[in-house]
Length: 329
Image (cartoon, rainbow, N blue to C red; front, side, top):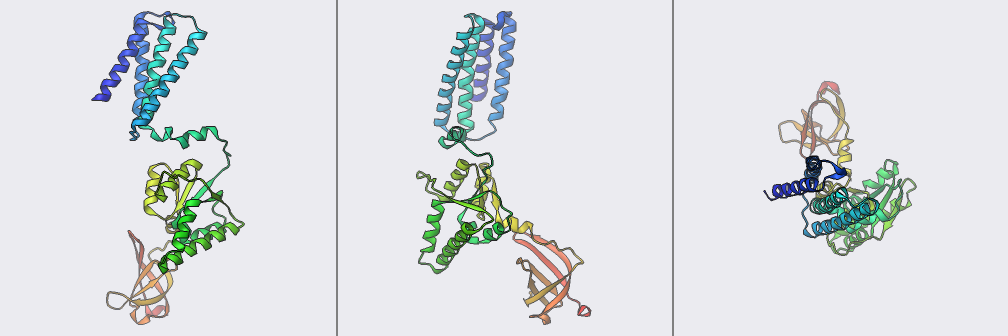
């Protein structure tokens, strides 16, 4: 209800300004009509901006103050180049009302626009061709990023931040043997990437001391460098996408590249163990996809040709069901 009262107040003020100070020496009622149309356009703009959900008090204050200063400056400039008449007064009132209104809406609905790092983008030189891919700890430890880069499928520059290096070092120095091995593997992957001729890599010293969480630091770094995040972390993937950060997920890439198997096709598999049902064997494809094969329990430990009967898509991946025919031996 409050926003509707605010909108009505703005429309009424601009319409009244058009009536009492008609622009271009028009009739009072025409001036009021012009003021009404302009105010409706501004309200429409406000409804578009309101689609965002950011509501920060300090940012709305900054936006309002900036709007007041900008409105006063625009009105003063117009007054110096135009005669002092009702039209000039109307234009000044229009600027003094509309600019703070827009500043307030931008501050409350587009909080990220007023972040210091975002504002600095307008004052720094940036190469049009820069294409930064910022590596997450999970993607480095996973190791497949090195193989992907060796195939030259990833362009641009890989960015390794100092806080990610520190996290890897802590993992590599962990008293837990498993974590220590994972950390050392991550450092070996970084060494491989830096020596690779297929991709360029750089170390970023940009840090955000006021932010403690590494994932939040990565998101801020991606905003600062206008880059993309490479990760396997599901939660980081979702949070970054909600904030408009492009994400390259290696797991999603691997799932997209899994070979398509259709019912009726014949594939060769190695029966690894027995299945849950009678006379059933279990095999795995090279990408880890489970294959359940009927009539194959006695073939454990052998490579056999099977006929695919169905493919089931589950939340964890695909499952393939097949049948072994002795006649095919």
